Image 1 (tube, rainbow, N blue to C red):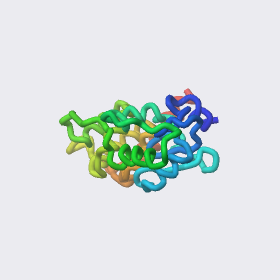
Image 2 (cartoon, helix red, strand yellow):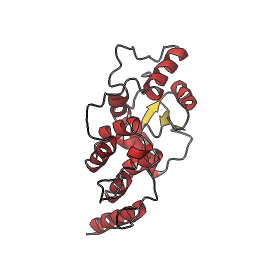
Image 3 (cartoon, one colour):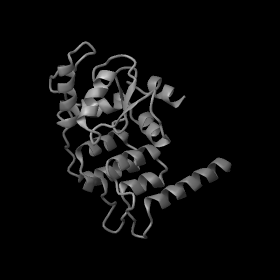
Image 4 (cartoon, one colour):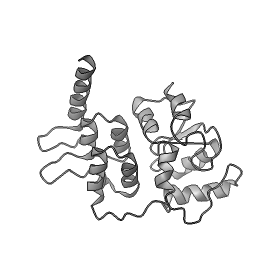
Amino acid sequence: ATLQTIRTHVPGNENCVDCDCPNPGWASLNLGVLMCIECSGIHRNLGSHISKVRSLDLDEWPPGHLSVMLAIGNALANSVWEHRSQGRIKPSSNSSHEEKEQWIRSKYESKEFLPTLNNTMPLGQQLVDAVCSTNMKGIILVLAQGSVEDVNSTVAPRDLRTPLHLACAMGNLAVAQLLIWHNANVSAVDQDGRTCLAYARAAASVAAAKSHS
């Protein structure tokens, strides 16, 4: 049922994220998008550090993976990854394999179409703010441009919570999963020695208490 929702109710997912081919049957987990079988082959060639490809029909779908697919989707992802295509024409389903590959490599490997960062705030701080406000577009943008250091930045010099601590505290599975795929340190501790898992457990028990009240 969740996979059906991802196919039909997440904006943009009725067409391939890269060539607009209808009814895409493949996904990139960490990008949170759906694509056709031809584009999925090109994504596989990028390497799993750029795109983690899965079949919608064949593969196991743990809750964390589903939550990312529900939280992002093709329309939101393309508002970041195709923000400024600089006059380049996006391939169609009828375009040649070479045209599709060139577009996909420019888009995800060279990151040529991302918005320019005009914010002077450090990327790590932007990520903290985006996680706190559950700004998925902001999170996608920082993760696309940032380093492992940015992903593992802390709230403040004396507040050692990382973005992953914050996502776990909010019980936001999609953001936590995304951060982990982007090399968030799951064993990081805050200023009181608490792990991300401790925050996740606390959030789960609060959620459980609310559902029973």
